[in-house]
Image (cartoon, rainbow, N blue to C red):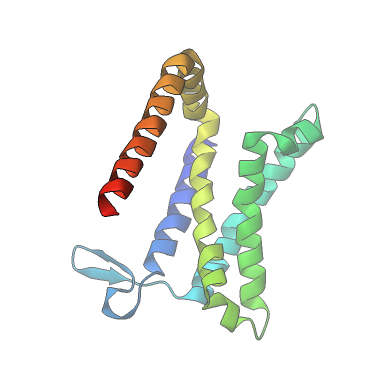
Amino acid sequence: GLIASLTLACISIVCYACSTGDGPEKGLHFFGINFIVDYIPLAILDGIIALVFLREWISRLTSAESSIEYLLSPLGLVDFFSWSFGAIHFAIAVIPFTTDFLNSGGGEWLRAMCAIRSLKAERWMGAFDDMWDVLEYHRPLLVSTGCLALILCMFLAEILFTFEH
């Protein structure tokens, strides 16, 4: 579970990092070795990892008490996006005449979505639950400091405007 998911997520993120950059800065430089992953091998790896996460998503979906509740839960969305963006990336890469998209900003954005897979660790760590508890517990303090910061920003903006004109 945890180790396999994190390993696959890390592999896809590192391979994405190896595909970024231009010219001599392209790739990941590690102890004098330059690791470069081209777009098509990255898409194939992304597709393979997407299949693994798709299988996991389907098994969680079928074993959930309420499929709709799981689909709309934060962890269900993370599981869905963990496989869907990789599958789309793979599908676009194997379709002829789509190299323009893969080399564009849209293709870069699609490749970067593999970073969502790092959120799969949340299932075992519960960091977002802890953050939410802190936000709820310290809400009055956070609201008052947020209001004070907003008032100070408006005040300082007015002072800056006055001295500029």
